[in-house]
Length: 142
Ligand SMILES: [Zn+2]
Image 1: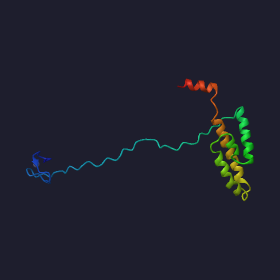
Image 2 (image 1 turned 120 degrees about the vertical axis):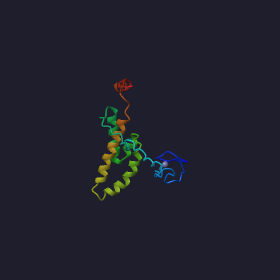
Image 3 (image 1 turned 30 degrees about the horizontal axis):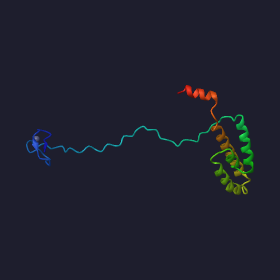
Image 4 (image 1 turned 180 degrees about the vertical axis):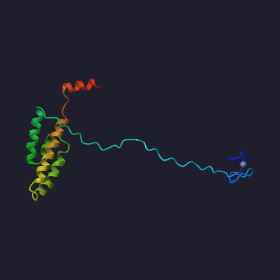
Protein backbone atom coordinates (compact mmCIF):
# COMPACT_ATOMS: atom_id res chain seq x y z
CA UNK A 1 0.00 0.00 0.00
CA UNK A 2 1.02 3.60 -0.48
CA UNK A 3 -0.32 6.93 0.66
CA UNK A 4 -1.55 9.89 -1.30
CA UNK A 5 1.10 12.51 -1.76
CA UNK A 6 -1.58 15.23 -1.28
CA UNK A 7 -4.07 14.12 1.39
CA UNK A 8 -2.12 11.29 2.97
CA UNK A 9 -4.89 8.71 2.77
CA UNK A 10 -4.19 5.14 1.91
CA UNK A 11 -4.52 4.36 -1.82
CA UNK A 12 -3.77 1.35 -3.97
CA UNK A 13 -0.22 0.87 -5.21
CA UNK A 14 -1.13 1.13 -8.89
CA UNK A 15 -3.27 4.27 -8.48
CA UNK A 16 -2.27 7.19 -10.68
CA UNK A 17 -4.84 9.47 -9.07
CA UNK A 18 -5.96 9.53 -5.47
CA UNK A 19 -9.37 7.92 -4.86
CA UNK A 20 -10.09 10.50 -2.13
CA UNK A 21 -8.85 13.86 -3.35
CA UNK A 22 -8.16 13.10 -7.01
CA UNK A 23 -4.66 14.50 -7.03
CA UNK A 24 -2.13 13.02 -9.36
CA UNK A 25 0.28 10.67 -7.66
CA UNK A 26 3.91 11.27 -8.27
CA UNK A 27 5.38 7.90 -9.07
CA UNK A 28 8.30 7.33 -6.86
CA UNK A 29 10.96 6.35 -9.31
CA UNK A 30 13.84 4.31 -8.05
CA UNK A 31 16.83 6.58 -7.69
CA UNK A 32 19.02 6.70 -10.76
CA UNK A 33 22.01 4.48 -10.41
CA UNK A 34 24.81 6.58 -9.07
CA UNK A 35 27.75 7.08 -11.33
CA UNK A 36 30.77 5.46 -9.80
CA UNK A 37 32.62 8.26 -8.12
CA UNK A 38 35.72 9.23 -9.97
CA UNK A 39 38.44 9.22 -7.44
CA UNK A 40 41.43 11.43 -7.82
CA UNK A 41 43.77 8.49 -7.91
CA UNK A 42 46.90 9.46 -9.81
CA UNK A 43 47.59 7.59 -12.99
CA UNK A 44 50.29 5.07 -12.35
CA UNK A 45 52.92 5.45 -15.02
CA UNK A 46 55.29 2.63 -15.73
CA UNK A 47 58.37 3.33 -13.76
CA UNK A 48 61.34 4.47 -15.77
CA UNK A 49 64.54 2.50 -15.50
CA UNK A 50 66.58 3.71 -12.62
CA UNK A 51 69.16 5.84 -14.37
CA UNK A 52 72.02 6.88 -12.18
CA UNK A 53 74.64 9.36 -13.21
CA UNK A 54 77.16 8.49 -10.57
CA UNK A 55 80.73 8.74 -11.66
CA UNK A 56 82.61 5.46 -11.58
CA UNK A 57 85.11 5.12 -8.78
CA UNK A 58 88.14 2.92 -8.13
CA UNK A 59 87.58 -0.64 -9.24
CA UNK A 60 84.48 0.42 -11.19
CA UNK A 61 86.73 2.20 -13.68
CA UNK A 62 88.59 -1.08 -14.28
CA UNK A 63 85.28 -2.90 -14.67
CA UNK A 64 84.05 -0.35 -17.21
CA UNK A 65 87.37 -0.59 -19.05
CA UNK A 66 87.04 -4.37 -19.27
CA UNK A 67 83.46 -4.06 -20.43
CA UNK A 68 84.33 -1.54 -23.16
CA UNK A 69 87.25 -3.71 -24.34
CA UNK A 70 85.04 -6.82 -24.61
CA UNK A 71 82.25 -4.82 -26.22
CA UNK A 72 84.67 -3.70 -28.96
CA UNK A 73 85.14 -7.41 -29.77
CA UNK A 74 81.41 -8.14 -29.62
CA UNK A 75 78.67 -5.89 -28.26
CA UNK A 76 77.21 -7.35 -25.08
CA UNK A 77 80.20 -9.53 -24.16
CA UNK A 78 81.41 -6.90 -21.74
CA UNK A 79 77.94 -6.64 -20.24
CA UNK A 80 77.94 -10.42 -19.68
CA UNK A 81 81.38 -10.16 -18.05
CA UNK A 82 80.25 -7.56 -15.51
CA UNK A 83 77.07 -9.49 -14.62
CA UNK A 84 74.53 -7.31 -16.43
CA UNK A 85 71.44 -9.53 -16.70
CA UNK A 86 70.71 -8.10 -20.17
CA UNK A 87 74.19 -9.03 -21.40
CA UNK A 88 73.17 -12.15 -23.33
CA UNK A 89 70.27 -10.26 -24.91
CA UNK A 90 72.76 -7.70 -26.24
CA UNK A 91 75.05 -10.49 -27.49
CA UNK A 92 72.19 -11.98 -29.51
CA UNK A 93 70.85 -8.59 -30.57
CA UNK A 94 74.28 -7.76 -31.97
CA UNK A 95 73.87 -10.37 -34.71
CA UNK A 96 71.04 -8.66 -36.68
CA UNK A 97 72.52 -5.26 -35.85
CA UNK A 98 75.87 -6.28 -37.32
CA UNK A 99 74.17 -7.67 -40.44
CA UNK A 100 72.17 -4.46 -40.87
CA UNK A 101 75.35 -2.44 -40.34
CA UNK A 102 76.99 -3.82 -43.48
CA UNK A 103 74.49 -1.83 -45.52
CA UNK A 104 74.29 1.27 -43.32
CA UNK A 105 77.88 2.42 -42.77
CA UNK A 106 78.01 0.59 -39.40
CA UNK A 107 75.79 3.24 -37.83
CA UNK A 108 73.59 0.68 -35.96
CA UNK A 109 76.67 -1.10 -34.63
CA UNK A 110 78.25 2.11 -33.38
CA UNK A 111 74.97 3.21 -31.77
CA UNK A 112 74.49 -0.20 -30.20
CA UNK A 113 78.05 -0.16 -28.87
CA UNK A 114 77.20 3.03 -26.98
CA UNK A 115 73.89 1.57 -25.74
CA UNK A 116 75.74 -1.46 -24.32
CA UNK A 117 78.45 0.75 -22.88
CA UNK A 118 75.89 3.02 -21.20
CA UNK A 119 73.83 0.11 -19.86
CA UNK A 120 76.93 -1.58 -18.51
CA UNK A 121 78.07 1.63 -16.85
CA UNK A 122 74.62 2.05 -15.30
CA UNK A 123 74.72 -1.55 -14.11
CA UNK A 124 78.09 -1.06 -12.42
CA UNK A 125 77.27 2.19 -10.62
CA UNK A 126 73.77 1.08 -9.57
CA UNK A 127 75.15 -2.09 -7.94
CA UNK A 128 77.72 -0.16 -5.98
CA UNK A 129 77.82 -0.89 -2.29
CA UNK A 130 76.78 2.22 -0.35
CA UNK A 131 79.68 4.06 1.18
CA UNK A 132 80.08 4.43 4.93
CA UNK A 133 78.64 7.96 4.98
CA UNK A 134 75.75 6.95 2.71
CA UNK A 135 74.87 4.22 5.21
CA UNK A 136 75.11 6.66 8.12
CA UNK A 137 72.84 9.15 6.33
CA UNK A 138 70.35 6.37 5.46
CA UNK A 139 70.16 5.22 9.09
CA UNK A 140 69.68 8.81 10.30
CA UNK A 141 66.82 9.27 7.85
CA UNK A 142 64.79 6.46 9.47
ZN1 LIG B 1 -5.67 12.20 -1.87
